[in-house]
Image (cartoon, rainbow, N blue to C red; front, side):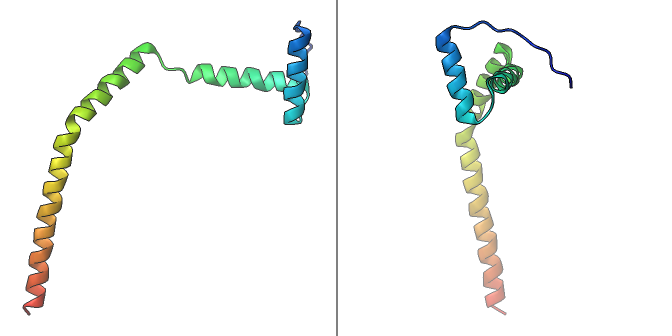
Length: 95
């Protein structure tokens, strides 16, 4: 890929910050800026809409409301399974 030049004007303080951040990562300032833009673009692509957030909140609320019944159902299933296993074990022992 052929590179093209882009001129970016920043304050001296920002230039020092970019240089330090790039140095800390072992890359050039240009590479640091490219990585930052890519990270920003990726983050923007992962942002959910307000509608999705509302849907998720409604689903979470519904799940929380159903948890007590789900726990009770699981306890009943475990108790029933334990009784069946105890019966099987009793029959095995009675042989």
